[in-house]
Amino acid sequence: MASEYTTTEYIQHHLTNAVMCTTEEGIAFNKACSDAGFWSWHIDTLLWSIGLGVLFLWFFTKAAKKATTGVPTKSQAFVEMVVEFVNTNVNDTFHGKNALIAPLALTIFVWVLLMNLMDLVPVDIIPSIAGFIGSTVFDMNPHDVYVKAVPTTDLNLTFALAIGVFFLIIYYSIKIKGFGGFVKELTLQPFNHWAFIPVNFVLESVTLLARPVSLALRLFGNLYASELIFILIATLGFWQLPLHFPWAVFHILVLPLQAFIFMMLTIVYLSLAHEKH
Amino acid sequence: MNMNATLIGQIIAFIVFVWFCMKFVWPPLLGAIEERQKMIADGLEASDQAEKDLAIAQAQAAEQLKEAKAQAADIIEQAKKRSAVLVDEETQRGHSEREKIIAQGYAEIEAERNRAKEGLRKQVSTLAIAGAEKILAREIDKDAQADIVAKLVDEL
Image (cartoon, rainbow over all chains, first blue to last red; front, side, top):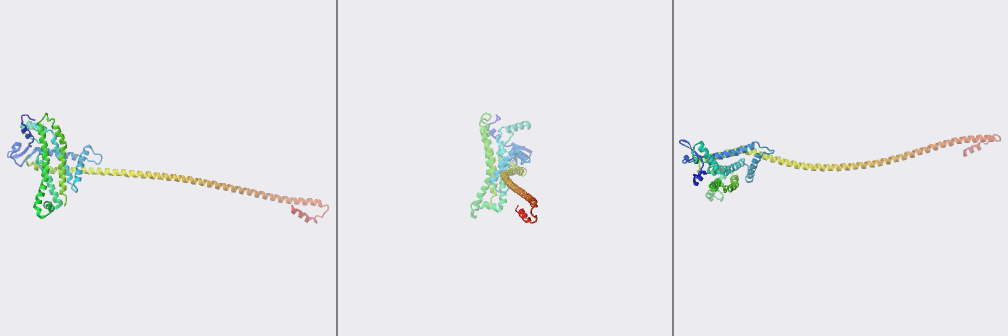
């Protein structure tokens, strides 16, 4: 922790994404992008999340390529354990035939879990390294180098996942029930009478829209809060001891739980989309 | 915390990851798992079957052993009976043979005796006649007493 900082500045620094945007002079970063509006990119979120996604796919593809039906290697056994776990959950909840849902659930679970686990990396390590590289290689003020290493604390990422799931919900609702069936579901429930159509529509639309919003906000809220507390803990005590340790232990439970909840709710929503009335 | 184009980038990344997972990760892994499950199930079934087969084979072997023992006992029994019968028959045959030989001997002896008797009788008659001839030659006509001599000979 840099001592010439105030605590507020320190916390804000750790909670700011690295931004990239294009201005008239070319590519710009961070503070120069403050008025770039929508067309700016959180490069730290993108890099970490895609990096972790690629890591997940690389590891699992490696296991899948060498997958034997005989005695599995240790990495194959581990991968199969995860796959079995996801598959069991999917089969318990989703009764139907869909080749997408199980791999979707696996991707969400492992990817979100990996991104959440970035939360356990001590909060100063990655910003310090980035600041060092920024100051030595690019001759920047290390305080102007921002890295937020936990992608799930970025609303853009959680909403991206939730919107992906939301479109799948709508796609399968229409595919299974037909467009008419989907409209009927929105208008003739819970009160099956024509006079209640507007009321029903408002209720059901809220229900439908609440799903992706709650998915995104739940994950974001949990991770953002826990990251914030990690940062607050970093301002207390001696070398972050002793508070950092129990909080991290607690997150061994919280982080997989959040990933699991996201996966489970995705499966539940999609299985609801497959249900005919 | 503001929303921006990162959202679009993340959606694209999400879609690509899910697609990749669906294409290259999930099918081979689940295929391997299911195949192994099938193999294990088959193996268990085979071992069950083998156990059953073994039990059947053991029962069969025991049955056959019992049968063989019974047969052997039967054969021994039969052999004993047969030998008894054979001994009986042989004894019987020996007895009858002996009787026959004895009877033959008796008959031969009888015939020999009869022949000897006949011979002796003839010789005795001749001797008697010769004796009588010699006695009577002196005083009696040989022809006149011939009927008496014949009567004598018959009485012998």
